[in-house]
Length: 209
Image (cartoon, rainbow, N blue to C red):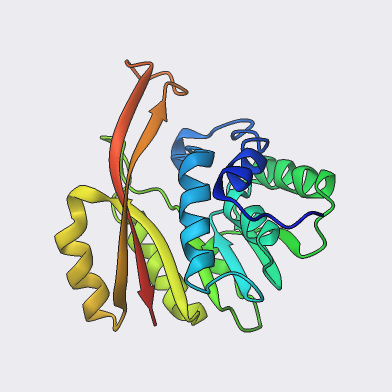
């Protein structure tokens, strides 16, 4: 496969990854737009966190960060998600792209144990954008990432919780090096949604362990 040398080309590749086939409200499943995923992956690549690294995408959904990392030269890339429908789709997409450095696993992230070293973790967990959402799910993901012991963590969170998160990261010996800010579009995919589309301010914290 031809090496990707421009962020726009990465975005175009990621645009071909479909959304969640059967989004489940209890899992707060929202597909990361290709423009956001490509920007974050491109930045991570520039910081030396992808090429030749072992990458893990926790709560991967349809696999955008796992597949994107594989496209950008990760040594290995693993996506983990509890939703079998999304994993099946991710496997299908990676197969069509003929990627031999990516794999997908159906598992609750709390039960997952890679059994080997991980260099970089990406995660876009349920970050509580729904009024009735189970708060604190993103912190569960952070704690799991700490347990797995990567060198670097990229984690999505609600921007409104930034001050709390900075203290939480510091209290858990995570050194925040970068904060990326995005307007994350929430489409009308569940019955309780009243708007066709709503933007939510999110941050991605890059932390070194």
